[in-house]
Image 1 (cartoon, rainbow, N blue to C red):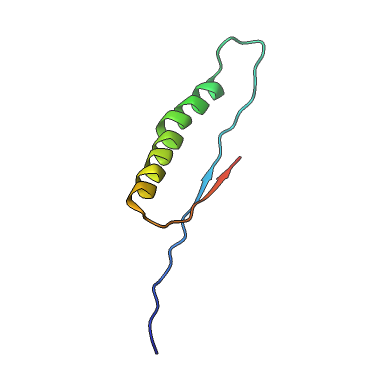
Image 2: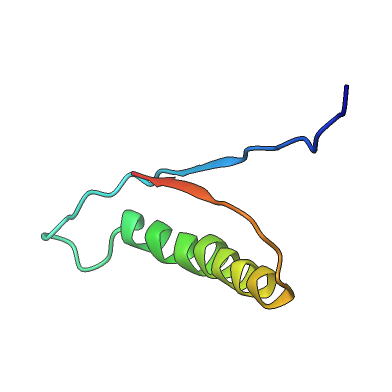
Length: 65
């Protein structure tokens, strides 16, 4: 019996509570959103770009709520 290459599935789920507070000029959830964009999503996109440039084949599942 020939052994094939294994597979690994990483499912990324991103959840941020977001409630708009029109009565306040600044609110915490908006800061969380910008932090997530700058600290998670932008680095993820940069990593994807590097993998594509190197010709690495990959699949990505990202769940956002």
